[in-house]
Image 1 (cartoon, rainbow, N blue to C red):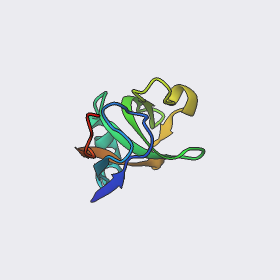
Image 2: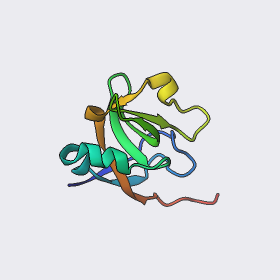
Image 3: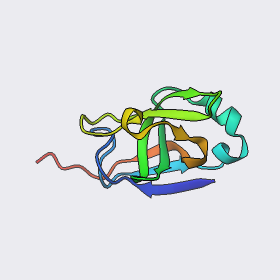
Length: 108
C-alpha cells in the first residue's frame, strides 16, 4: 500500500523540510518483514511511531536482526536519533519513503 504524509519539523533538514510531502510504501514491512528489513540500506528514509514523540521521519542507520531493532539518525544538528530514542521496533515502523515532494521554496 501507499501512504502520503506531510513532513513536520526539520529533523532531516535541509533535504526534508516542514511542509514537504513524502510517499511511503507501507505493505512490505507488514507482509514480508524479514525480507524488508534485510533490503534496507543506510540512508533510506523511514517513518515510524515513537511512544513519546509521535510520528517521526529519520534516516535508517543499521538493523540488528537478532533483536528486530532499527537504529535511525537525523541530519539536522538538533534532531534526536536512536542514541536518545533507543532502537525502533519493527512493529513501530509505518513505512519507507519512496518519493519526496518538496514544497515550493523561496530564494528570499
